[in-house]
Length: 200
Image (cartoon, rainbow, N blue to C red):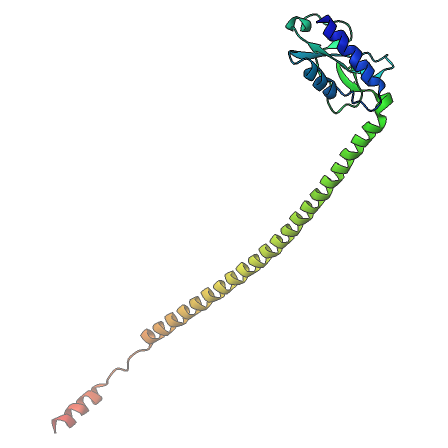
């Protein structure tokens, strides 16, 4: 197994001399898996002081679970994120960080992409807010028109009630006047004259 590891290190070092070779963590893992199908996992070495960027995030194959128990200096179980261009392990932060000296343009590009995405989200939010405000104005106008219609209907109903009350009062007055008008009493002369005339 020591021969396999030494061969891999030498192969990766030779590969890093060629500028076109991908030295990302993912590419290293794929190469190791292809060359050593029996490996069971990976460990990651990070030497931030090394001038070769490969050693900032060097991937080592693991063939035995015991390799995870006592890790040597600069070797970690935690895998660096694929988002990092030149990952370094930061003991102070307790995780992988971007090597800011070599990847500032990449960090700025990612920040610019996030800013652009936020701008697009803000535009969509502004359009949605404008639409909601227009709907609220339309709803308010419709509510006002409905309120005015209901008030007018209520006023008409009140006027009808007044008219009916006034008609009722008029009818009651007319009925009471009929009862108050006395019938003309018949006099005795009229009654006897009718009998006399009627008797002839």
